[in-house]
Length: 390
Image: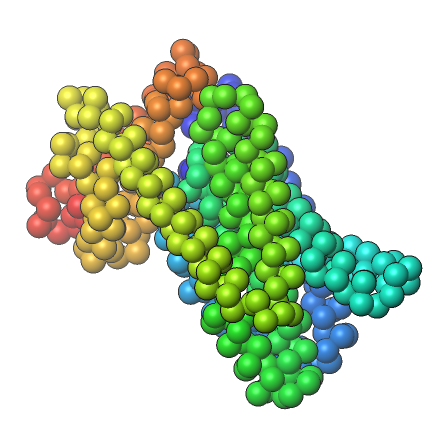
């Protein structure tokens, strides 16, 4: 979701007062994440050695841009703010991995000393890792849900944020695994590990954490108190159980069967949920924007375009072709603000957002910004005029 309307919480004056505080908190968050990230990489480097560490780092980072692009592409109607997306990814890559390394190691050592090495390994893989890792990844999702509620509108947001934190966690974890493969069998060993973790199962950590994201997403759109309380807990428990099932089967002959008969269908089910959620969001846009056609804010063709994934993609490409990157960015902002306007009205109707004067202030801000953008994204001389991007 874009920056909150200035009419909220006191208007522009309050926004100006809060801006330095927001920037200070952002800088502090980045410093904390950077500290944990460097500490984690240092621990991994010391464990596998500098050469193996560099091999693992290159292999782990190489496919990440493609996976990130795919995760972010899902959010077609209301893209998440760049800062929020980057922070979520880095939380998984730095903070969650450090917490997992620390607590898993301590727990496994304690169990091993009391019950033996084999028991310690079983505890580490099947109990400690699923609980600790999924809880560490889920922490940032709960933080966004509680403290940045305007950035968490439903199932799509839950899946996107979960995928980002899962991809970050998997990337740093893969540095360790690829590095260990390089230590054991050189580049061949690292490449073999990459084939399994980077190509055949790169979606596992995002898949586990998507359960938590789904739970929070359902809570975000529900008006029932018991759903808002139980859905996030159920989602986190499902993430832990899925993670435990995978880890428990990873060292046995059941792995292939579990992968094809269980995890791939779960992935397919999440893709189906995404498709249904996108259709739902399109219907919300289609329902709540036509009332602005008479005010001149949108044309009927624009409402139709804004309410379909295909229409949005086509308009974005056309904006890029005609207006370059600036035209593309302006058009994306225009699309996002129009969507937020529809979503806000939907939430007010369902009692999920404050109505009355506050809703009127939000609408006034959206109208103002959309009218500012409209001449920049569509030429009054027509779609073929120079500079036109619609």
